[in-house]
Amino acid sequence: MTEVISKWLASVLEWAEALPVQGWAILLGLLFGFVVTQWVKRTIPMSVLFPDMPKQGHVVILRALALVSAFIPTYILWPPDQYEIWAALAVGFTSPTVYRLISFFTYKKWPALEARWSGTE
Image (tube, rainbow, N blue to C red):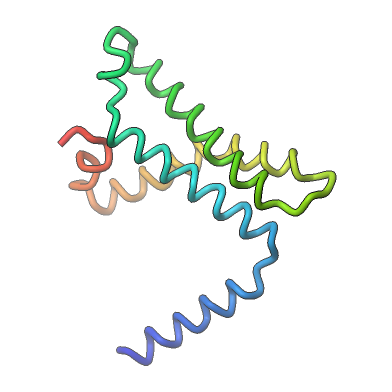
């Protein structure tokens, strides 16, 4: 079992070393967008901040947060060139969709996590 894990870890590390800086900027931007959005959603429920706002308004605010929180690290980590702003914008606009996909598949596999991650437990 440990041999399988060490082989898998070696292949992941090999893949990570071969990943260009732009790839790291994209991955870390998407990860940062997911983590920040999840953290805000968990620690500050939107119903407390905006009690009179409909649920769709909360969704818009969280998507905007995901966009901004993915844009910033991608822009900072991307090497300075003519594509820097465009790449950061693309990752920022992709982040809410990636957030929804990760949440959907995670909740599908582990339904008990939905209440914990959403801050509704």
